[in-house]
Image 1 (cartoon, helix red, strand yellow):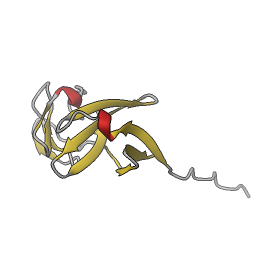
Image 2: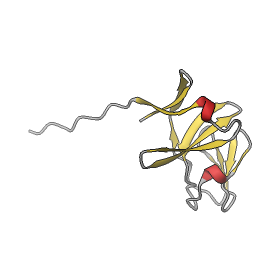
Image 3: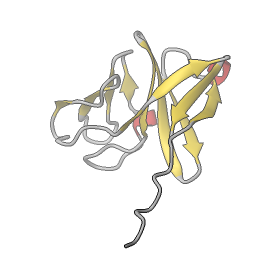
Image 4: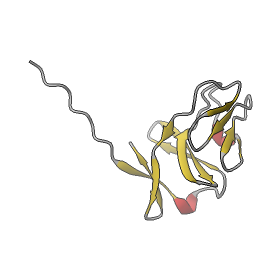
Length: 110
């Protein structure tokens, strides 16, 4: 009988200081090899992977209205709060990263 591999427990990790965010916009941040987009939106701060699920363009270069992010390559549209697809040609939702603000830092659960 073999033991199942232990699951690595997720932990909160500091990502970027709130003071360093582009106010009301999208800030690109790297976490190891991951490229992330940090949205300073109308409903708070959220984090997703930075690449569009359709054409892999960097969403940090797209138009952000405080709730929706538009891909700069083909104008696919996503809800920056949930990752949901709002307009074609995108079909797959964004991969969102659970985030919170603690002691002036945006933290992500990884």
